[in-house]
Length: 186
Image (cartoon, rainbow, N blue to C red; front, top):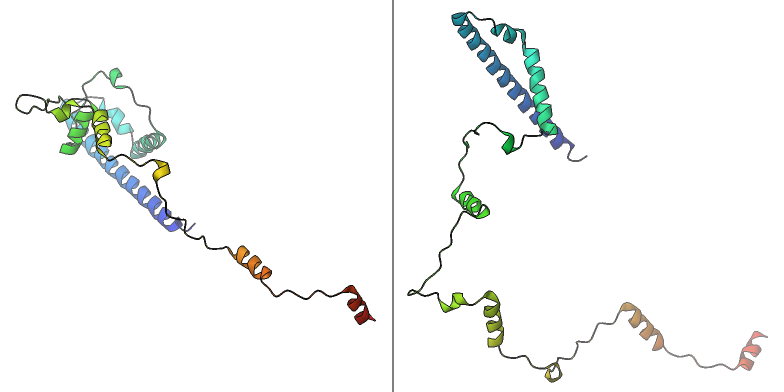
């Protein structure tokens, strides 16, 4: 509910953008029709008659249908089913994207690192051996029985414990004999 104005604006923007795309599409259709008419005038042919019968409402309906299909998802043909060569890619990858693409498709060849014609001893060891060597180089740990731990800091008492302690330390009443109680009642 609180995001309703932003959502409304986004929907309006999307509808406006779609309307502008439809308008430019219809303008391109109109200019293409005019070009075909000019070419038809030169060749004196009949095929342009079909295009003349398609009015702007028909083109708009086709456009809306295409946009609906795009929104709902269109099942595309697999690459192997294509009988034509795809058009060249219209965008250029950044150097990072080219490198990542090479790594993903494994189009690389690693060279061995050589120092004075030999592989350095550090590279001859596996990662597991290097880790074990590092662990062994550290001083050994003391056994648990030899370790001296600091005493635990006193834990602060809870409110319940403090209340019970106050009750226990209160002044105790003197015991009264039952005979004395009976005398006071009479």
